[in-house]
Length: 212
Image 1 (cartoon, rainbow, N blue to C red):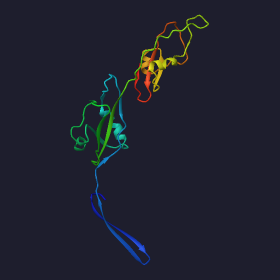
Image 2: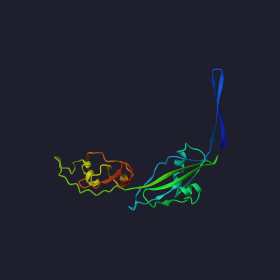
Image 3: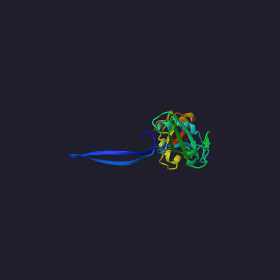
């Protein structure tokens, strides 16, 4: 079947010395439009605390096409399903979300056969971890008077995260290391100088958003 229409189906069933023939009309409608499951969420971290960020939708093209198993598709983004179905008012530039979350409608047109697939993409702005600077850590020197002793910095995790168990805390010697998540200080830690400043990195393990 290559086009829509009414087709006759004939089934022949042999019964002893005769054939029982059943005929039925079947209406076949071929549709070049299909709806698929929503795409993976497009998530960014809230850098300015107002639940809005700039989303470059075109950067999601490859992921959208990959959800169909690849192929030769043109991807377009719209604020409404009606616009997507009519191919009107496509979003052509990076946008700032106007709600959180916000649903974007997506059309994928097969450039080889013209078939169109519709789906949705949810934009989400995740909170940056809410942390506080810990109190200065002051301890007495141990048995050897050398200005060094053992610190278990993990004891201060709860103070920094205000008891949020979803946050992962690591400690670093430099701000750059804290920002990049490199050269984490093993625990427990023995200080080198009697007065040191260490840097803290806190990351939400679910969203990946971080604060230092």
